[in-house]
Image (cartoon, rainbow, N blue to C red; front, top):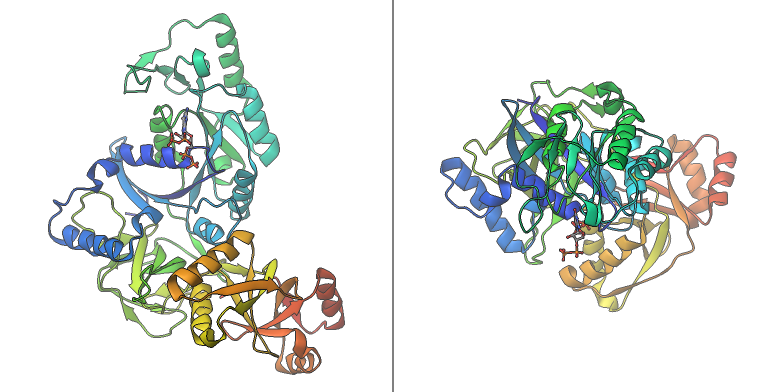
Length: 511
Ligand code: G4P
């Protein structure tokens, strides 16, 4: 059952068309059409009403975090799990972690703008983990840059081979359709809306200049190579228009045909295969309750192996004792009888009261620890100053909760009573302030701190004790009680590293 899973994300710069493309992909899978229907039977209805209730209670869209849909392609039913990456301008840890839970990605580029800053950053994250990428060059129904320019820019900016799979016949006012190279068929704008409505025609004669451009696009770039794509060295490129539905069908077929099924996941030295019998998975995201009267939150688990069944007992690595997963949330946006079974590659939402944290492993036998979901050393550190000093308890709770969720990191200095929060991007601070106010009724200000970054300390007890004796003013504990060196500058880190060869100063921490 796992070979037909495709778990992927869409990466793009804001405005390139991610939302529009997501909608079109869901439509292809029939998901949007059915999303509002309530005629599911039995287990499916129970599963659905669970999450609908949760959505109503919280006023949040749990389902938009993961969208699951099916489509039959070449006689095989493929299950697609599309994970939403938060659309922030800022790099955030949340986005990074979501990308640890996918096996491949679609990169959407605006044909008039090419590679933009956020695309590049997200791409780098994918590259770190060798996540294979299919490129979708969007908005060819509008005026855009020449094909070669775009193809060469992707190749140069990202150091990737590009392999075009189709080409628009003109753009903007001159747009007359899209030619698919594999089938040599053309999809053309139809009707008043000038959309692709399903008619494919054989390629007839083309104007001379267009014919030359197409010919050069076909022969000027490497042919598609599955291995190179799966290694992250080559990206197949589709031109299209999400808005007008061009290239979308080809894109979804490419994911079905080429994108990898669930991949093994690293657990220390080991690789946990999707074929392993026991259920294992890891939490890559926690979404808190928007209703301050409830403590429930949803932890999103990427299933790595085994067959999950409703009610199953799994042991979270952070807890050590098993929990029964009675009301898992599965994200099928359409009717499905067996909505309480899940396989490797699937995402399960697990309602809990704060017991599950980002980075936790869940397993049947408590014998696996997934690695590679790090906390990053914060690059922005701020002191939290309460507007109303009587609210220290609420503040502590808010900071603990939000760090558990991965919104921020919190550090408690060894000396003094102030709390320090650390983030990787500025936006996280804004989220922190507004959520503290809205959900915890805590008004606080963020003031500069003397520190520029932090390093997790490791070493034997003696070396740590010795260091602690002389550096108490620069030490803090993180939320897990682990010792952290708060550095005033990168120079400070280097200096201490040289002075204390028995200690390691780590810029990431894996739970
Ligand atoms: P995002 O999620 O990546 O931020 O982008 P989104 O899909 O919201 O698209 C951004 C804008 O680009 C939207 O227009 C959308 O309609 C338009 N767009 C997306 N795909 C295409 C396409 O293939 N062709 C053309 N011509 N436009 C496209 P908007 O005016 O900002 O919003 P709206 O009022 O249309 O929703």
